[in-house]
Amino acid sequence: MEKELNIIYREPEVEDAKKIVDFYNYVGGETKEHPARIMILAMDGDEIAGIGTIHSGNKIKARHQGELGIVVAKKYQKFGIGSEIIRQLIDFCKSNGITTRIQLDTRKDNEVAVKLYEKFGFEIEGCLKNTTLLNGVYYDLYVMGLML
Image 1 (cartoon, rainbow, N blue to C red):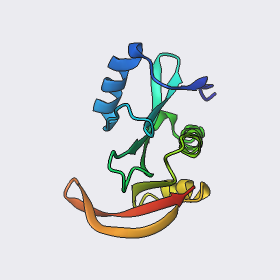
Image 2: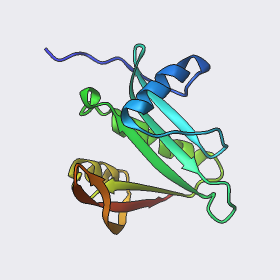
Image 3: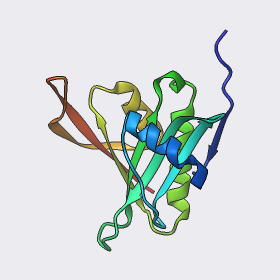
């Protein structure tokens, strides 16, 4: 029988700091406080199952755009956690009074991720050739965007 998940979605608290650092050391990334930035944690008890972020710049000409980042630990994938994190991030952007566009990058060969983002209305806006290098292999990245 598969493990039944009890995922709670919330913003981080001070007590989460070490877990967040450990999680990011495991899967990568960072965030900072800003009115158009947010981090959403997907928690399974005391364990972080996933993290989603929207990062917006401070420059006036670009602060309307949020960069979406999301990561879900492998053992928590295929439970809808990524979808729920993305939904909450989009809702945050729609309500913050600043963000009108969301952008993300994803590997072109990651068809599951591309379909997930398309489900939320993201469109492929371009392809960056040979942008990611892993274990001696180059991968193309899609740039995807969503106007709110």
